[in-house]
Image (cartoon, rainbow, N blue to C red):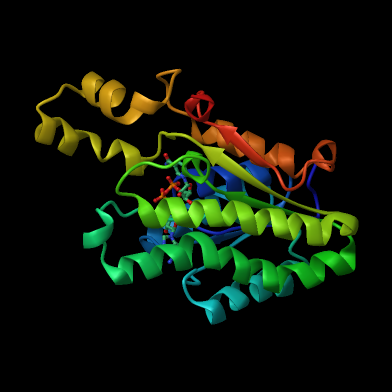
Amino acid sequence: TLKNKTAAVTGSTSGIGLGMARAYAAQGANIVLNGFGKPEDIEAARSGIESTFGVRAIHSNADMTKPAEIEGFVKLAEETFGSLDILVNNAGMQFVSPIEDFPVEKWDLILALNLSSAFHTMRAAIPGMKQRGWGRIINTASAHSMVASPFKSAYVAAKHGLVGLSKAAALELATHGITVNCISPGYVWTPLVESQIPDTMKARGMTEDEVINEVLLKAQPTKEFVTIDQVAALAVFLASDAASQITGANMAMDGGWTAQ
Ligand code: NAD
């Protein structure tokens, strides 16, 4: 169990991050949520975690593209709960465009959110983890940390970079009881993915099944989505004592995508 531990998950007001936060809470950890959204939705997620799992949960609205706010996020966790033991860098976004048309400010934003934010959270959280001799850092990468797709240059570059950062951190922290790993999902059924389907059906004149199999799951040999709960279960495992010798790894959960 993770009783008396604190898990802080960036980008956890929706999708994979919220699933991870709930899974850590189910193990008894106190939770720091982070991310944007309607205040009433965020409050419902926060109070739902407390009432369902009997732990404490707080929300930080820190913008993960802003180093000073990121430092505040880590401080808030440590000051509220006494420690930050499990750090999950999960906040991320996508933008699709040919390189020559790629808006420069989108490139900067995606690199800041999907890559640099993990450097800033780690920089702030590692001293406390070292002091306690225990820590888990888990980064949500992507199948796009291992292979590329056209028109996703910033995302692919940031996710490949996140894996490199994680490996360097794993080596630095190897003798301190702190592991650093990436989880690399293929297509996960999140509201984000679901909401693209109607538009794609219209744009391509396809049925829902055709969009799912011939567009979304084209690269995923199982032809099934990864579920949020499956990704969250791997995140819980990586935080367990059974996973103490897994460090510097990039664990694929992609229905076979990157085996091709
Ligand atoms: P999502 O859009 O449902 O969630 C993104 C979260 O990040 C939200 O909570 C949002 O509020 C937050 N966020 C956005 N900008 C932020 C900022 N500047 N500061 C702080 N928080 C911010 O997306 P998701 O599908 O759950 O994706 C989560 C992670 O998983 C991302 O890193 C994504 O790249 C990765 N991923 C997703 C898939 C997929 O198929 N859904 C596949 C592989 C990897």
